[in-house]
Length: 427
Image 1 (cartoon, rainbow, N blue to C red):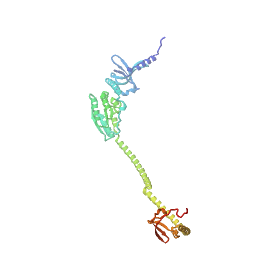
Image 2 (image 1 turned 30 degrees about the vertical axis):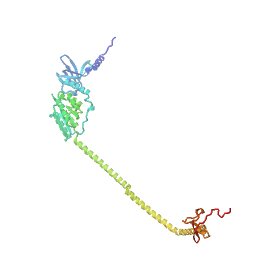
Image 3 (image 1 turned 60 degrees about the vertical axis):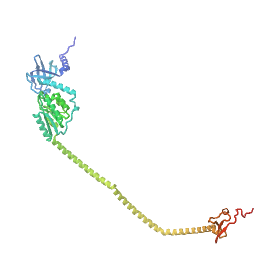
Image 4 (image 1 turned 135 degrees about the horizontal axis):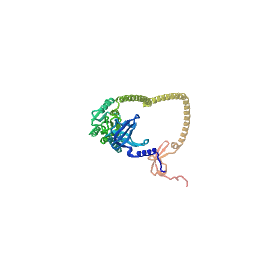
């Protein structure tokens, strides 16, 4: 027997088929509203019909935040959502995530397509986002010159910082030529060396805000060198400009809050920082002064003048000590002087006697060796005419003149003949 399925199984199978279909997961359906009921739970139940058919629809309460009008019978709307099967009743229906009156649905489709294209190009990448300066003093505003947006920005800016400079580039913010005018405003303000630029307008329908969904506006924001805050519409309004801008603000007033710092709070913080800095500086000066005093004392101890005085005192002490020691030494020597004088005299007399005795002995010895002593015994001292001693007969030639020194005088003689050293010896 072939397989038999339950009703629930079949409905579940069909639901899975619907959910796996790419087209049915994100689809726009245009039709006329009928049988519209607002349930107490917050859900909206209705039907969409045209000349050829009907499809049931439901919008759950969680998705109603983006619904900006009251749905009524006979309205032509564009519903964006997914088609799936309600298993209990076995019928398919569209689960609406967004509903717009006829004409706006196509705009949303264009919005999603452009959003995806620009995201693929990297225009939304956080790496390109510039930081909003914390203390902006020159703020550019690109918006209409009349209307609540500029008034809100002026009011908030002056409240937060009375000294801020606002530069307005008045431009169209809706209708034909608005996108080009916004681009020109961004480029003009970017050349004025401002701190930040606010681009935006007040709330409105998607058609009213469409200029901020144009590709040329998105690229102008991306290429701007000055940080840009996007402030388009109310908190629930979202545009392409919000994704490209460096910072998104829910409203123009919120943009002014982000762009301006609170001057009073800033000055209070400066005063507090000034007090902290003053106390820290004062403490630092006190510590430095104490350190200087300590270093000055150390410098006094180690200065050449102090060292010189110390050395002088030490030298004076040494001098006093040396004088005392000399005095004691002199007193001791003075006391020992008579005894040493006596010993010195005795030693001197003993040495004198010894030397005298030795001198006498040496004199006797010298006397025995003296030529004069020999001469006194009959010997004579012979020298040549020029005074040189004659020690050998070989020095004398016959007829030479000699001097002979005797004990009592000198004889000048002439040599008649010399004889050798064998003279007087026996053969």
